[in-house]
Length: 504
Ligand SMILES: [Zn+2]
Image (cartoon, rainbow, N blue to C red; front, side, top):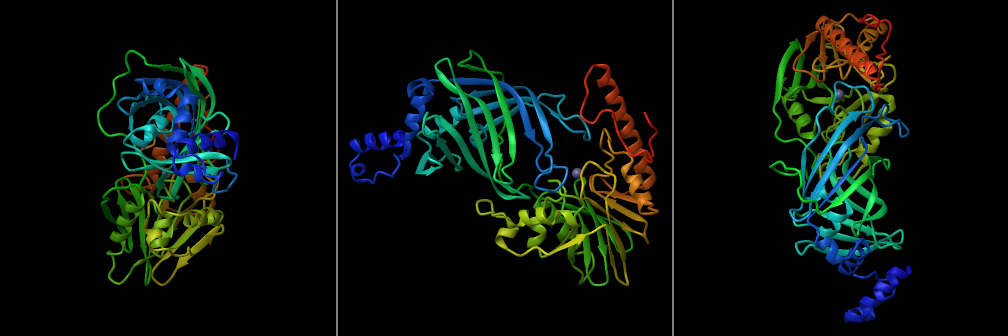
């Protein structure tokens, strides 16, 4: 035990009856520790007397599992955060988060021309030490046991809304070192988030961190990096807060989902929830579904609809186009339903990671019905064929939105199905040659294209024409930016020379 804990334990032993008999290793109780943290931050009276605090700065957010490849050491994708201002109404226990986001990679459209204006309440406000400490000290909060992690005391506390969090104090400075909470995720089950606070400096008599960084317990991934460039406390007027509920987060995602079925050909249906979905293909004695897109609830809605299509035939396999969080969303759900996972061979390790993760706090179907994963790899090409059907599955070539992807093709019906090779709602397309390159590479002759994102099947001609327009829009966007001296990620637009679009 370090001197800080020993001193606190001793002072505590003097005032509480059972404390004197406690062994030296027992850390002081939560309240004593929290008050020592308040003292370190500027004094309990000072921090509990604050009305508000405004923080500005800049940073990056992790684009959740939009990694280039499924590999452990794949480059992640980042979203730049600029013009950020977070106004904490400490009395009202809420915050207003305003920021401009800009993807640091080429994608479908600009995300950040408008500044966000997000009301936060409950746990969503507690990834900063000042509101977190005040909430931990609140009379409505229930304090739990204290434990020691890497020499730092960790205080468990359950807030009024029912969520449990943990706060660690730096053993030397007594300042809050991190706050931790658990949220549910469709791909990853229970995800432990830790917000780290570093570089404390005094502002108007209050010590506040200059650096904020959040990590999750999947691959120790950083999800948020933020550098503060100003702190103001007790400002005369905060910006207007929007009405409505706060973003408390958590949960496996997805409310009630309605699946819509469209017959594409004999033994082939498009089954979709909203604008996301993919085909269901009939074989002699079973069905195969393309893409576990969306939330678990959305995938199950599609699966249930598929299982009603043909009397006596059930879905036994799911084909996953690629590993991104929206596409391979319900891998855990698919395994829980006993489906064989068909994916490009490089994804096996990642999907085994997904399936192995716990979901105790936010139990999903796999937590309730644990099963091992059956993985069928696609190594270049896989053909599913019986007397009724022939489905060809191919490794996607020459497409740099992601690697280790696949698409599928029904040669008899001339129907192609793919995820993220096209989406007619995209404003920009940066990989215009990819769809045409794959058709050419594998010598296919599709008539119809079914994209995972979109409202319905389109002809391949319509799809390629939409892509051509999108790449022209991306080229125009790059031209404007270059003229303004901005070299945007992805500019100038690159694409396969054999694609359908003329060179810029
Ligand atoms: Zn997508």
